[in-house]
Image (cartoon, rainbow, N blue to C red; front, side):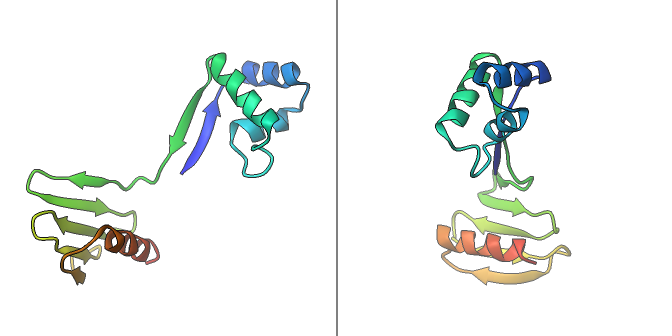
Length: 123
């Protein structure tokens, strides 16, 4: 997941002038750079950006868990695979892009779902 604060170009220029920094530093701050965007200065830049109308966006993978009315949770992946978990029985199954059963886990726990997701994402 990636975080970013969006502002207009003129707001970026304003932030650079207000803090006496380069446009690159403003970019590091607004993009939450893992090193250069974690300083107190970067936090102040983000705070002023939001005060002046900027807003934070969070990007996430396109796959999502869908809770169906039939008591089954499903998660679809970009590679075509998916898992299904029956909330009543605890049965977790993994299916490939053609719907072929690849794995079955009885009485699945949350840790099992996490492991299955990592496994599917690595295919």
